Amino acid sequence: MRKNPITRRELLKAAGAAALGGVLLTTAPPTRRRAWAHEGEGIMDLEIHMGEMYFQVHSINGEEVEAEKNAPITIHAGQRHLIRFENVGAVEHEVHFGRDPDLEARLYKENLFGEHGEKGAPGFLGLHLLPGESATLHIWIPEDRRGEWEIACFMPGHYEAGQRAPLIIQ
Image (tube, rainbow, N blue to C red; front, side, top):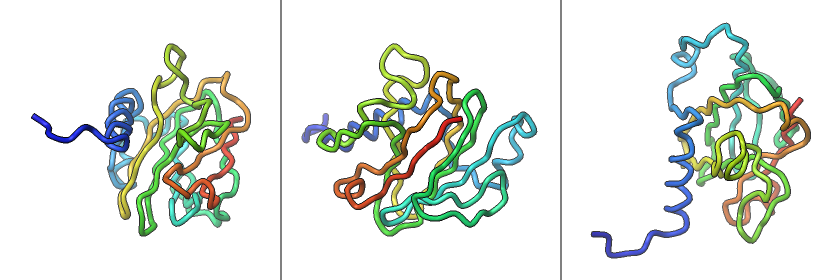
């Protein structure tokens, strides 16, 4: 029996892990990832590095790119995506997808993946990565989610320090 109550951070981590049951989570290295059965089926492969107060696209479909930190990231609705996040920083970072940030609650008021009862992954809040960790999300964005969104880190002080990037769904 647990003596201490569950902390908010532990609860959010558990909720995020449970929500990822509908959104594939894997830590497979990129070379193995490309050997999946889905290869050649129109999946966009994107690698994003997370560091101290930034998100930066590192590669698209296996090709390294020269992207600025916190530059807009464009993905397509109605298409499957493998998005690999790697924490190249020295502290824990997280990724949230949405718009209309609520800095007191440390989440978006509108979640890209839907809210309870909507299409998508109801309840998906974010992904937490310790320094050196990586994870790959296998996602599909519904057509009705086109527009301007954002990805951000809501660790205390990170959003306020600029760790966010526009996410354009075309």
